[in-house]
Image 1 (cartoon, one colour):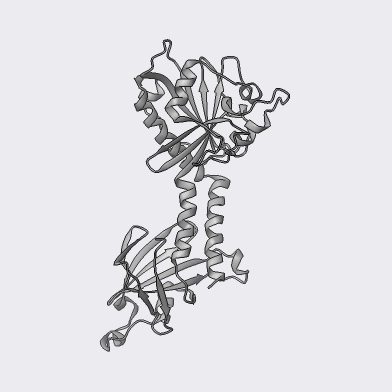
Image 2: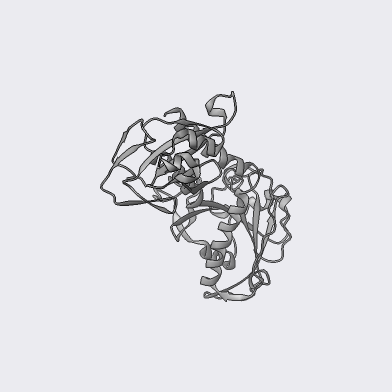
Length: 352
């Protein structure tokens, strides 16, 4: 995508763009598109007297074939594509004389005004939108808190600095313990000087990077009852893992944060330590404002079946990513992602 086109020369006739490139084919949003096709970019204008930057515009990218248009619609919510035959846009008289569709035909089809954007390559916008998706999809940060028996509120939980061998084993199922000093990969907001968290847990799997904000590994301030450094990071994670080192009771109200949407509660039920196998009960708890709370945890995990450490690690990885997606379909997070994408679309329109 980033090498989308080498040259693009605009001609103001018949929606034409002349494409010259050494690439035979690109894959645009999962659809193969030959690079020598004519393409054009239009803005779909809503009826509004508001400034461009405050209106939710959509972009239409037209690829012109011999007998049809392939049209991609880019909006803040999604990117869709459709095919429209030339004959659909023309009346019988126009088809008889083999006339070509004009912009007026397309405007009539979409029942809206279309504004042409000058000669600019769409690949810049695509790259930006992909980067937004990449930041959202291919990197994640999750909080991890240790809860011990008799602890019921965040003040007690945030003060924990160490746990049992079962807890350490659980951390190893999440990823590798890494030294944060000069750490070169995704940091999840932690500084790579080790000032906030000398060590942390990091995972890179299936082209996805995860940084865990582990409470017990972060700086502890004996004079701070609220443990602000720990709370600042974990309190901004949308999903927080609660590891219960024994019989504990957890309530979503125990941890106060408007940014935490869901908790993955993992309770150790293993009495004897086993390096190769683990035994945890897994459950999920949502804050009340999460829209989609119909979330399923497989029975073998919810009932605390004993299993190889590797199998548990794979399941937790997938479960955390699913929880993250549920959170990003709710409330402020959903609107935040839509606003960011809309901002990039509107900036593209203004520069055209």
